[in-house]
Length: 59
Image: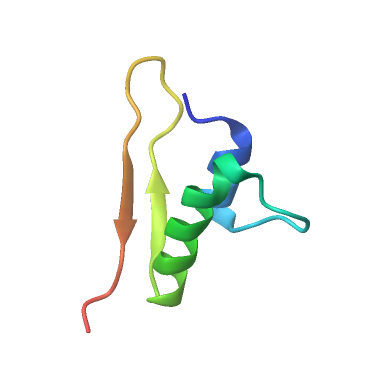
């Protein structure tokens, strides 16, 4: 399951402070999507399904 901290990093970027090692991948994905003009999209929390996608513009 995706906890609230990782969900926040994926959707809003890094909160002030340091990144925990387990959150580094989420931070990297969020940063890469944002730098290319895109964003990360997440499904609502559900017990059996988690969908994560990236929306990036074509250049």
